Amino acid sequence: MNQHPHKNTRQFGLFAVVALSVLALSQAIGYWVNETIPLHSSIEINPFLFFTHVRNHGGVFGLLQGQGWVFGLFSAVLLGGVAAYLRFGEALTRAEYLCFGLIVGGGASNVLDRLIYGSVIDFIDVQGIPYWHYVFNTADVMIHLGIWPMLAIGLWQARGAKPETP
Image (cartoon, rainbow, N blue to C red; front, side, top):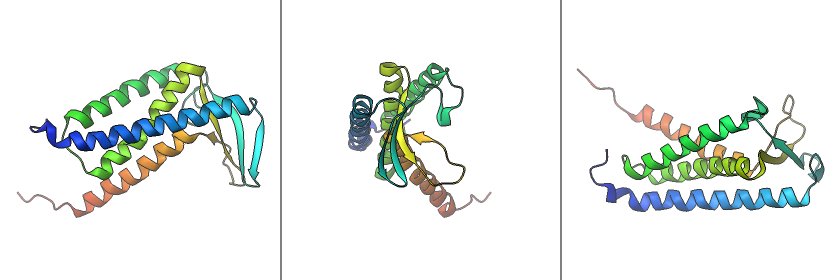
């Protein structure tokens, strides 16, 4: 446990601002999609990008349709645990707090969609990619924008770590 919890208060503030901003942005866009684009309808943005209003009643990539409550409950518990760790655990770098803000904000938005609408509103439909038939949302983009740099940071830190000598 962090013996000086005040040291990561400012960094936690960064995490909270990013997470709440992502949550607000994702919810606003999802509301717009829900109110503007009829379910199962599309708006062509360009030949490769459509906004197609679909609902995901399952988990990632539409797995386990009808069991969205399982993913919602699991996600809510996991997100709460991550936030608690970030607040009370060891201090991390600003980049890590930023990445976790993107991940938690996106995850919280998908959980909130399940609570409000009973499913996740997906709409970003990229065409022309072989074997890709998935529609996703702003929250999913934010989650990926957080996960991939975190993986890169972890790999970079692991490469720089020197093995302990006995």
